[in-house]
Length: 153
Image (cartoon, rainbow, N blue to C red):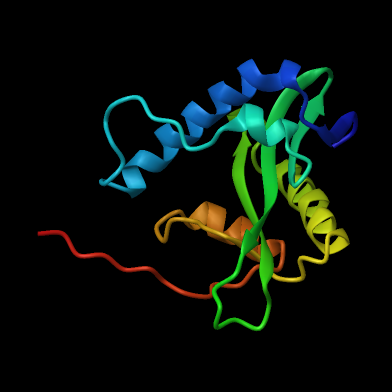
């Protein structure tokens, strides 16, 4: 996409990013009946933007923020070969720009940040029934690793 810029998120982007977060929650509720019906928030986006150990990026097209994502360093379980890994999240793209490779470019920037910070294992979470997201991440070379299961009473 011509005129697409991937850049670090700035505090001025916060109002748009907060809207993205609510759209993401709205999109994920059908996949997860355990998400509260009341207003919720997944992330502390403002503190993430200010934290140098977290990379929050946006895609901008013609001066409009159209997509987002972050990478952060997480401590791995003691039984794993690595001490830390990169975790990707907050992947959201405005509907009119989906399917145009925007998220793929965001993921590439975040992967590069992880590798530059010696985070050679990168993980993300995606709902099992979110087939379009799974396909997008598979195109970015992610593989399904583990399925989390639950039982309701």
